[in-house]
Length: 81
Image (cartoon, rainbow, N blue to C red):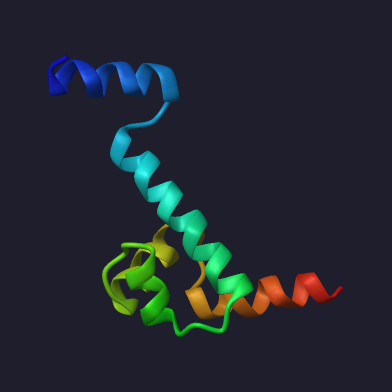
């Protein structure tokens, strides 16, 4: 299968491009690590293949409209309620 055909068929089946799918999976992993661990944001960024903490923060703010640290605090507050 050609790359172009794969990209087209993936989008038809999944509703998003492969790169968007990968980004969503990485963000889900990041959110889980922020909620369930005490790891620094920079280490979480590296473990979830998001580069460094600055890059992760930029993507996080763009997609979730909140910083990784604010997400961590908010998710922990909600878990304690």
